[in-house]
Image 1 (tube, rainbow, N blue to C red):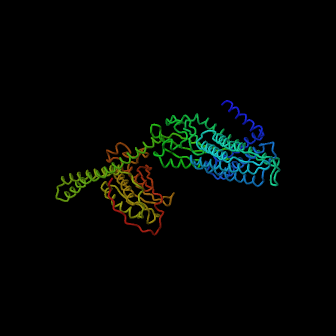
Image 2: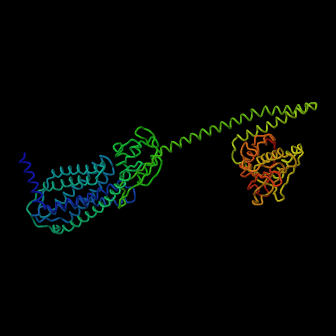
Image 3: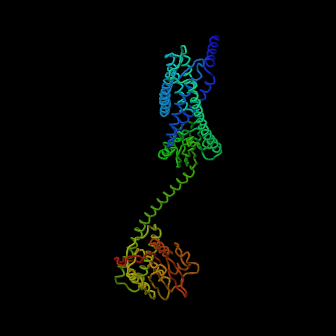
Length: 627
């Protein structure tokens, strides 16, 4: 057996050194590696890059595979049987080039695009079939040697070449590192077995004269050298761009290693190739768990947040920048919210070499948002419960109180002596005071509501109706009461007459309540600084406001001084309700102490006088002073 092995090695050495010129054999290997490196690199970019540059990479890859297989064959043939004056038939040589260009590259590209074992097998078989057809045609038409090929051996070698070509496609599909080099080496072995094995199975006859269409070795050699140089330059350019891309990825990996954010490196097809330590700290998952998988699949986001995950997957497939929030899952199944950012990394040729997925942990922020949302829901529920309570209390308290006042009114119409009538008057006054306090509390506790509705009303009519209500209370205290309407005030205004009337009644009631002598005036006029604004004022000759008290007058339960409650009663809600009403109408309320004594409170309503002069005025509603 040792003698057999030694004999086989001796025969092989003689085959490559005697029947071949070693220089051309080495040149053929270099040409083949250069061409396949360009071809498989172009195939990867074409398969994984969805941009408009795919056409360029497709044409480059097809040309590299076809020209590589063809030039490798003829470069090696230039060194075969240097003892014979071989010639190459011009027509057959051109036809073999067409077969190589039309068969090898398209088969490999089609098989790789299937991304499956069946695609690898069929693509490899197609490339091997085209290479075999080219080889058989080129050898069969050699001039000057009368070749005879062993068809059985050629068929077996074609099958072996198909196996190596399929293995190259599988390495390109399943490999993680140096895929281009591995695929190129495997296809080179298959093509070398086909070529050199086929030549070993070819017998030649006696040398003869070259035909008129046969090209001698010397004529073919410059073409082969040119193709070899061109393919080598192309391979060098692609390798340079590939190397720059790898260097960029290495720098990104070095930076990402020390990042607090989780970083995943993806291949152009969107599968995980590397993760930094921060990802393991956040999720408990390692590269072994994630390698070769898509991010959403690996981090189990499909079920947790399918819509966001679909957007992230689409961005990765399209190789474009993208940013979104996605809910992933940790190893223990806990939610892991992250601000996900996708960034393609391109080489100097513009091809996507990798993609970077950065995950900024926002789980705590999401938890706080959920807590705030729950607190808001609880607050809204409490507000609804308060409104329902106020509605029930308003009915339950006012109904019996109105019954008491109604019966007191009926009793007042019956025959009573002076003492009984005075006592009944105290009962009615106390009940009405209690009703006002109750109304104030319920109104203050109720929600302020939306903006007050706007409608047309007559300022003169409103002022007249309010005057009739307040005049009796003022006269009962021995005070004068007057109304004043600005001469330049239009006949109609816009606003909520009911809300405005209630606010003015509160101001007038306060003025009468705290004024011991003199009088009260209610006025409406145009604001000289804003002709579209309506200004309503209530003036009195009372004690005015203590110094520094105006800043808090409109707060709830606030009064000018501590003696006000004992002197006038009430809870200090009147001015707070007036401010709320003014704000609902889009206005403001102000208070000041007048020089020489007295107070003035005014409500300013911007835009109330900006209306058509011929707009119809509705009826002014009736008012009842409730606080």
